[in-house]
Image (tube, rainbow over all chains, first blue to last red; front, side):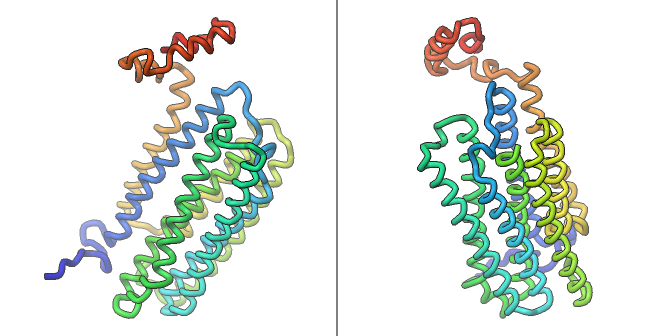
Length: 198
Length: 134
């Protein structure tokens, strides 16, 4: 007996949405609260601290700016991969999704160099409150990037066989993965000025 | 975005490229602002204004919120309310509305590390209320 999850391809008559889309939005709502709590902690720590360093004094602005460009570019390629499926161009989907994954890897490689540069100078999460919150938030964000790479890698590779049998369902999956990816980009858009520039 | 014609999808792609370019430009603006060495408050206001603009572009265009179903807006409305409550906590903390010792007061002193805090207070003159909070 096969069990089928309903309203994955077509919209639910009550909500007007397919269940995957509603599900990913509910998940993103919980993510907003997770990062919101960390931003709130950042404000408490910063306001309550007698002395707080400017991010630019400790962190690398050029590296973070490069990473911001990489994430924005990956958001563009992600949305282009979804649009390619809408145009029935699977080849372009593979190209754009592949670029998205590469840009995400690039982000993590730069982050790796950024972290190791800090460690080599004896700067650890335990060094001071600023570095503690910096490593906590950027580390959590990095884990989200890694999760995005895994999901996007699956959709680019083994998961893409669904395109031949259920193209609408596959397109919906890519859209859901895209919504997650844009959220990860959105978080970085706020992290960048808050941690590095102010 | 379902059920759109090929022409509409191509127009959407042009919009994505335009928004992507705008986001690149705004990133340059954000970095440029930081080099102006403005006083803290204008620097925070300007940097956050640019970040909010960029975030709105990503949410509205890339995440299709400009053309979404009512239920999604309802979910997001509740999320935004929750987010602002979380953002209000620092304000409540600062004004003494939220107090740490009211949360942890049921715990024995040794579990709070109170002895250590008392020592810390002594080292720093003792007149500060580090120890008293516990």
